[in-house]
Image 1 (tube, rainbow, N blue to C red):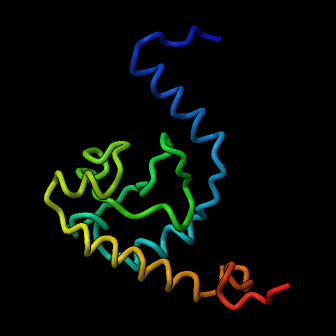
Image 2 (image 1 turned 90 degrees about the vertical axis):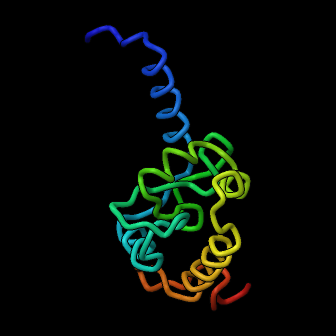
Length: 130
């Protein structure tokens, strides 16, 4: 086995890979496709694709790759946001924070009203209470 690279970039990449692996990530490819279709553009700037998965709450701040935390972002927005808090970053970039938050809330509501891919209701959306 070759020795691991000892560059700063490599250390950061390994540390991020450990954080991602340790988090409970359950975003399926079909959920990602649904998110891209529902947003139709970059969630932040409204620009065209190709899109990258961006965590609204970054993994470094406790976020996960889940349907409720991931939005499609253009490469520029994803790289610029990095691990910043979304609303503060949007204010600094002079992006429409209100439009994003409203769109995100509407999409989450829509997703919760829909059924999961396996036909089971999503939590809190018509699921029988015990």
